[in-house]
Amino acid sequence: QVQLVESGGGLVQPGGSLRLSCAASGSIFSLYVMGWYRQSPGKQRELVAAISGGGRPNYADSVKGRFTISADNAKNTLYLQMNSLKPEDTAAYYCNARHIVINRDYWGRGTQVTVSS
Image (tube, rainbow, N blue to C red):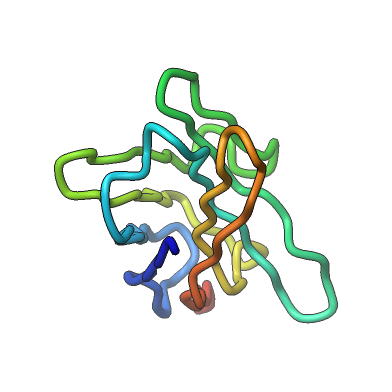
């Protein structure tokens, strides 16, 4: 059983920055594709960014050049650095781990990001 705990959300003004963290229960990064998703009211959950052990990260077009996903294997922690935040980035952000063979998904409970002046 994989447990994921997000932190780092909050209220930020447009143009500001936040760094989200996702602490995983154990050394899972070599077996899972790790990703950040977001969901705002009335909308479907969407992929923001994802990274796998040996692959290049990929990003939604809406966040390219502004967000950076990274993983610290020693700390079993996934990060999402978010810069130049916009009001449309407002959403609940979820950490996801998908097993690379059986495609089983694990989710965190989410952390709220609100971009507003």
